[in-house]
Length: 273
Image 1 (cartoon, helix red, strand yellow):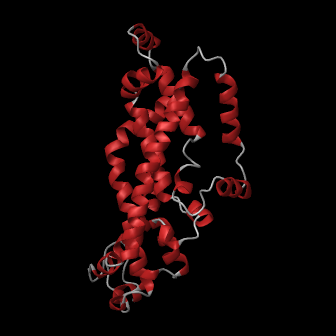
Image 2 (cartoon, helix red, strand yellow):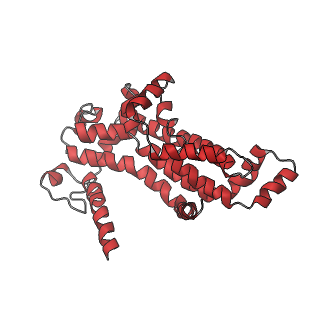
């Protein structure tokens, strides 16, 4: 019952947001909307989806999430595999260095100076490359690789396969739960990340959807609030809720397809060292 109550407390605000996004401005102004839409309407979504800036920000977020996740999985697997092989004598030292980055995080100013020195300011690469290898995700993936029988790797070497061929043909296919786990973790982080965009991007044309959402919900300075005359009579709250739903739904659609792999991946990663 306690867990049910906690789950219900977490879901009620979500229901209210969805309900307001489908409600008329009059119903929202009169505080008639609770967990179900009042005076059902699609005007809020029509007004939001008409905005070119929202579609552009949406496309940027999709690009960052897709490419950034692919880069992160590739780089994480490339480092986790050698760290899982006992024949590599320097692996313990590297693991200690990775663990240090997991415990001690660099402050914002050194990070900004590093991004600037690499020439990544005002580029989308600044949103993808800095977090390409997460220490936590690295240890989870390494645990998967350690669970793979060493006999399979030895047999591939006897057949003449090199390390890259072994990784591509044996390790990766057997690590689908790990790949699914990493895909969810990295994609959710990239999709929801807006702080790096605020720090490293000064060109508003490069803003992803989450920054547009934050801009509209918190400061009301988004182009959405001023660029279309046909939304002048709509409730600002209804428009905000519609933007929130649009920004949340895509990642929620992806999650159910990878959920079973995610659960298995987290369990294995928690009991292996």
